[in-house]
Amino acid sequence: MSSSKRKDTEGSKLSLEFAKTDVDAGVEGPYLAVFPGIAPPKETPFNIYKPDHEEPKSKKKRRILEADTGKVEFVGQNFGENARNGFCRYVIAIRDKKTDKITFKDAPVIAVNRTIKSLKNAKVHTSSMDQFLVAKNALGEAFGTKKAKQQIKSVERNAVNVSTLDKDAGILRDTIAAKTSALPSKAEIKAEADEDRPIPPYNLNATKVEEIYNFDDLITPAEYQLIPFKSILNNPNQPITVLPFQGSSYVNDSLMALMSVSKKDRHKIRVLMYISYLMAFRTIPDKKLDDSDTVNRIMGGEVPSLILENFYERFTEMPEDSKKRHTFTPKSKDKLLSWIFVLALTLENFNIDAAVMTRDLSLKQNRVNELWKSLGCKVNELTATQKAQLGPNASTEEGKNLKRAILTAPLTFPLPKRGPRAK
Image (tube, rainbow, N blue to C red):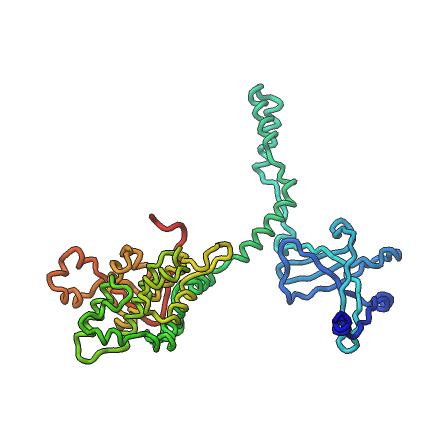
């Protein structure tokens, strides 16, 4: 067994060679460049130079590296004060695929510094006010009182020598310029916020409201076929008893309205059952997500396993540093709520009472309005026609606060808020 293992590991031998011929022939490169702070773009071309004056044989390896991006100059050298000191020798291995020969080449290290061209010739000029203060202090030293002389000396001791800060000022300018250039624009901030939204997949380029949220992304075709809607059809007098979550006025009222007509809308029944599954899943305690007995009891025991598996995949997370397998996070909870809201929008022709889910989900109206807006809805006051349909209820306090959540195309999201959320 051991002999066969040794035989399996044997392969073609590689030929190793140090590129001595290149060194003798004066072939340049490669070089390892070190960029303290910020590095230039990858496509920036660099040139390598030798010092102009004659040098002894011991200094023939001196090189100067240079590049110009238009606004910033990059210059480095492997000798002098700015050279990178070290006791390591670096080489780069290059393999020839045809001959299987590996060639090692010397790779000297060059530290590269940068200079902003617009600030290269900047100088600090002494103002006339500075000259006036110098003359004034001289008079104070010659003819001033003891208290005045002490005050002049105190100011001189605490004065900052600006000339000693010239070098630091250049570093600060470079740092500020680099940091500000790397700051994202408003468009980039908005795009990043849109991408990170805990909402269903959406089509930002949709021209029709029906195309903004694809129904198959909300309920996959496989899930849709597994929804046991016939159990509701078999209980026309008490359809609510079949639902795993029976505390939703929206689902209950909508289901009773569907069962009161002769021709049952099976699509709406499926979607309402799916919403009930989502609402029930939301009530599972975080610590009981991996307790199958608790999950089966809360979900009613009749939810198809594929739907339950997809719920875990979409609306829970599995932290690496936790002993629990699954857990709810604030983001995953918002994602679950957004799924419920978008499904309700599809049933209501994308125009729904903004308060319809407030009591069902035990949320405050301000929080519900934020969720509608995060989906791209506009939360508007009732129109005159809608208020007239309310009749006497329009004058009540509850009627005055009624609003509609309306989804329109093209899809737009609110700009991200700055600062902490108001309490």
